Amino acid sequence: MPKFIVYFAQLHEDFRLAELNALSKLENVRVEYDPCNYILESPFLVVEISSAEQAAKLVRRAILIRSIIEYWGSGRTYTDVHNEVKQEQERWALYKTCSFKFTVDAFGKSLTQEEKIRVINGFSFLGFEGPIRMRGAEAEFFVCEEHDETREERVWFGRIVGTGSRDLIDRFDVKKRKYLGNTTMDAELSLLMANQAQAQNGMLVYDPFVGTGSFLLTCAHFGACTVGSDIDGRQIRGTAGFKRGVDGIRANLAQYNVESRVIDTAVFDASRNPWRPGPLFDAIVTDPPYGVRAGAKRQGRVGGTKGELSLRLVDGVASYTRPDYYPPTEPYEMSDVIRDLLALAAEKLVVGGRLVYWLPTVAGEYTAQDVPEHPVLRLVANSEQPFGSWSRRLITMEKIKALDLHEPIVPERDPAHKNFRDRYFSKFEPVEL
Image (cartoon, rainbow, N blue to C red; front, side, top):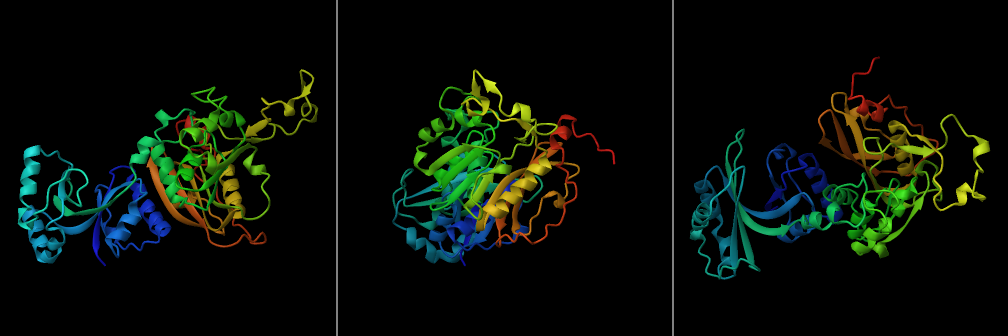
């Protein structure tokens, strides 16, 4: 198959292959590459795809891919690149008279305008006769020098055949939103999670810890119908958060013109949800509360139910019927949150549906066994975002078979994220065994 150069954004490096693989499945584009050739410190990966059209289709909604380039040559020096390009001169004729432009870039170094012109002139042997157009050119050629102190320098050359959707990061920038809160997920990661979930037309996506609704927006942007819930309705309504009095989540839905694809939001405890039994959702995308910015809570009272408080009257009205009512809650330990989330996904996802969520871990104690398992859920991707003494991992799981209520679930050991909130505020002091 023809070779192409994937030009990644040089950030969230541990997430890039996961998104590439998710988009390959979503767009039904076969991509072949050697994982051993993937280098975190490099923005380039050579892959094989059947055609330029398929390559463009693959990256059209990518967040961590800048562009994809039809491979023409690479090498340690420009002479190496020129010699490789000259081996396939029949390719040049396709672009002999069309309009064209050259884009010259460098990774790990800055090039002056004079150096860029010198690079372009070095490819004059191609003999292109068409007009040069900086905008709307029929063919755009890409040259990039890759510099890294730990590896050999390399030069890449080819024709750009498709670009990603990194412009969406600016469009969904949280600083531009009418409503946000202290747990609002940044735009880039929200969009990335929508791709991991493979959100698209005809899907129903659910966020059980909806907060200010970031995932409702991004999944709806890609065509999915979305619904969210939260135990704290104040976040949904906009009576809590950084920007209040703007109609909460609804203000953002109108801002991004996705009201028709966001079905609704509701207030309830996800661990005691009112959904009908059986599969319902094509994907569950969420950021469970783990106590760094907001403590996790579930319905209940510390010390158990107190019947005498259940029908308290406020101004002669039963408290639970008031619009400002907030149900009694108790702390919700992190490992319990994740266990219940997997149980929810196991029951409510359709077969083939995906669960995409964040898992906090302690940097010095994490092992692969800390990622919870379930008999009907298969781990697809596990990408780390480090924060020094702790990390959060974007976990993607896929439902592989129908839930059998009689199938035993192997009890898990205490994971490193157990009592994460307490560990976080104690600065992750070693646990005495």
